[in-house]
Length: 550
Image (tube, rainbow, N blue to C red; front, top):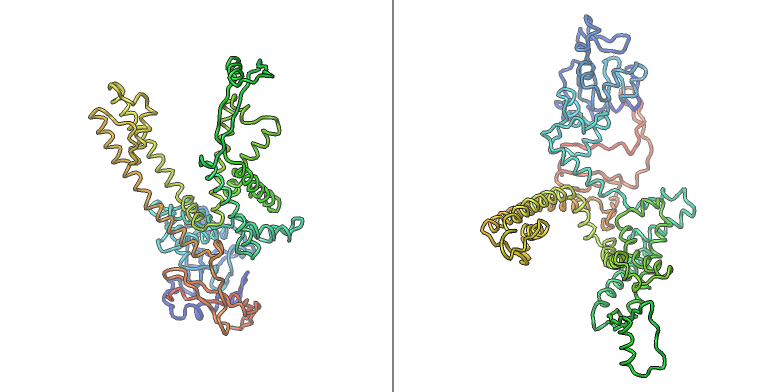
């Protein structure tokens, strides 16, 4: 047999006898093995008819995909205008081997070592121009197959198929992409690569070593200590009274005055303001400094040892770390330039900014999410449900504006009505649609009460619909956690079975994967069949019957 191949042709010649011995009918084809009398092979490597070499509707391409034979007219392939088959028929004879796995010149066939089940979707695309996704097919497998055949799924996906599920699965795969980038290959080109990699693993992967677990314990301890100090410092019994006095610019203090009343009268004359404020005890401030020192060192070291500093700084958990230390940094900068809280009180805008930054200290609670698989799963669920939550928010805001406008025009002319503007009515509508019922304002007219009733009903429907979607995404995230044990550190590494037997691991209903025994040395095995010597890598000598069930 004369052949030209980029891979091992012996796989093809023995394919039916090895893999499809019991399924010969599935590999049958209406294409004759020796070809028709009308089909001939010309010097341009085209399979054409005798009478019409120029008409592409009578020029056929014969090819074999995983043991199943197919035929397509050139006109059909050209009509679609995309794909590996189009590049194959347009390329010169000497370059066609780059677009297939083998060429059998005696039977005028191109061989593709692909799965026939997946190629059925591609073949249907060339016939109909649309890609249909079967419900029992993994979207990732479909993506890989279409990528091999050089077909873009987004341009040809049929409207009847659940392409949203396809995109959802891709998004779910993105959730389990490596976030910490703890791959040692990323550190090889860096200075002090081994030391930086060890420090990175200690800070980002608590399951990597005993030192990493100890570091995680210390980190959680300081987070809990900081939050506890913040909570306890707000209790009045643990606060101290501080007197603050504000003197005017033209004030001149009195000396040698023994009477307190005279001093107070003099200060009152010049507008001296004395006020008393409750502040946390000094011990809480000391605890805050200790925790802040730990957080700053933690963040700085992490950024210094990171292989991609900007990528690390823009991650959600690291942004939370930065926001947790930002209030202290701002206070320190203001102290260095000679400003304090008393001076900022005159600048209402600046003082408000400082107060908001101080409130951000409570964001340290989210730092616990780095070591909590439950919080991480919740965050992944919200990420996967972002589109649905955005849609719900848009619908809710539309309803709020609509019902608020109605209630405002129905209630504004009533005596003692509190709906004196649409924003105030929007507050009432939002509380009503969320079924909270704050009760600070109520409609007075019958029409206003009817509108409020309709708003309640619409709010129940709008808020209830996304619940099933969120629950479904949560189940997908939980399933992903089970299938990706390397992300949570809870999975057990596959153990080799005795006697070099292949291990099978159940992934779900009617699904299994083969785990290569660790005691098999990768190499080549020489086989000889039909006079052809084959060098097949040992790690490729795995055949799984797709009709098997566990």
